[in-house]
Image (cartoon, rainbow, N blue to C red; front, side, top):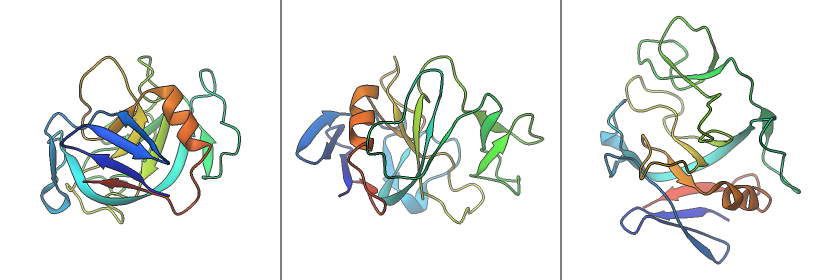
Length: 166
């Protein structure tokens, strides 16, 4: 069962539930026009790959069937198109630009990585995640929902599920 994101309505639907979600500050764009740093959410169907959980703030939900691992303070995600590890997890310190995944604002207490831009094409966008909603009214291109709702969904998702952004 896929997660369906209606970008025009800013709603995510899953298993009969319909909830508010955030998209990128740059709106939604066709995947072929997505660029690093544009703040846009890429339209398309992106398989869900892995779940990253911050151990001091979140426990794995019951029945979590997707592959998962604990986050560590050194975890990052390369956002530098010139980096051979672009759009992949890295460890800090990292010699290229890389987003820090261990954050104090709760945004990345739960991260679901997606197959957007895999294999990576330099500059076509990195770190398009499904993650927790924070105090802002937008993301940098990801999809964000309230943490309790995200944890509930994770307990019901199966391998092969995707984030279908329309």
